[in-house]
Length: 250
Image (cartoon, rainbow, N blue to C red):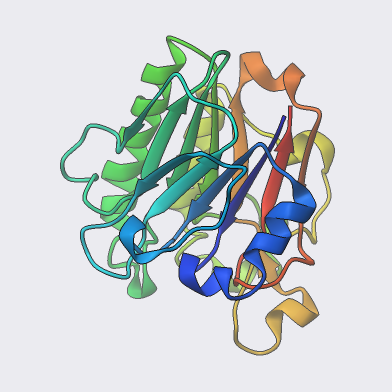
């Protein structure tokens, strides 16, 4: 089984930039998208091979949102994490399959000036991890998406100059530490220990061309599931968004 996760920075935008060709060429069983910035009724989707489609759009128009398109009929699915303060921005879809839960997440950005850092680190990160552990009591969990944090110094090109910038604060990185300590595995690091591998690049200063980026998009799995992970990798050559797709094969 192949699952692809991609922050598309607008689903309507990515459709006009070769999204259907990308899906056809890579032929994933499941596609998880973040930052779709649209409601389902605003998108005329041409993905006949993916009859199971789940959307979680933000209440605010043109903002945030997640979607999952699957060839495989799920046992069930749900939107959000059952916490009112978190669930109006369309950030989580959970899908139950026979052998695991798949959670697609677009984690809140702490924003310039770290305006949302307290919310992100003290509320969201805590409640999201509790939610994952609740699911895990029933079945192993795969979760993927834009986690808006570079976990370690090798996960971004310029760590020293970004220590107090959103995505690389001590608080956000500690939130990822907590995920690891809770037993979840960053699958990319099962196969690649070196630096220089990124999933997001600023549109400024030819950052992508120079590979001055951040690795902030992930596939993580329950520790009990890691032996079933055969590959985990990034597709940095795929254009259309400021993020690259990430892939897991199980």
